[in-house]
Image (cartoon, rainbow, N blue to C red; front, side, top):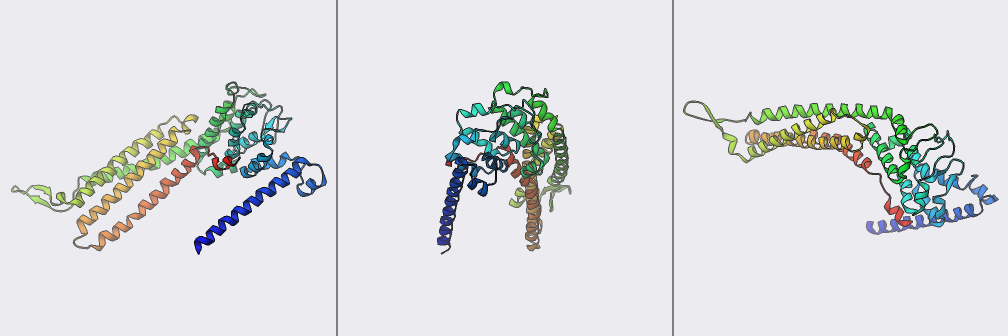
Length: 371
């Protein structure tokens, strides 16, 4: 019965979506073909049919755009403002809507024409200067609310901005990379000026995070190094009353303890070196693109392994020492040992997830395929 209800719900939602798409197409056809009559002014109080497309591009409503351009594909590359030479793709760059901008790969030869558009005048509302090309616009800082939706971490915001700049740099003509606008500024000049504060805050966050994790990794390395040479239990007594081999040396549990302790020591030392490399980085803008974020991900990964090795060594040692006398004690302690594992997962993998979301400008291939 639940499966039947789920199938009915899927069919119902698909029918609603089809009806929605059809309604949008019919309304747009009426507005586009007859925009100045009473029908369009009553239903959609706009002065220009391109206004709807601009608003859709601002918020990243790529589904709406796909419905419209499926019927009127020429709207995708038309200028929304002849005076300033701005297209929907310029709007997508300003508001960092990668799902909308990725449609540029679907317009064929018109892509080459759009990438050569240059602003014909100053636009204070959009913060566009005369002579700005696509790369000039990409070099300006994104709106704060848009950056916060990407990530709350300044370093990842900086990485996202660099990714945008590099992506636009790939598609504009080579001569446009160093083109100067009316203010005698190249795209790179604009990027450095606009992202100066974000760059400084990103460096501060990276150094603070790396220093904290390096301190924790150093403590772990010290603890596990000491534990490796402090074997618990009794020792064999030799004739001269000197201590011989530990009695637990042949125990399987002891071998698990020693291997876990060694793994924790090796990976803790490795994480110290990785975080040290982050602290000593020159922190150039390009370093935030891949070098520093990848080092941080590597440091977090090996740090998590060192934590896991430390907890495993602790749990096995509890079983070795206390299991015979009090079987409940190592079981309870092992259950409690899950707490630091969970906390370290929460701390490390949150950064992993946010980093994976930023590393690639996501392409909505499933939506574009419908076009």
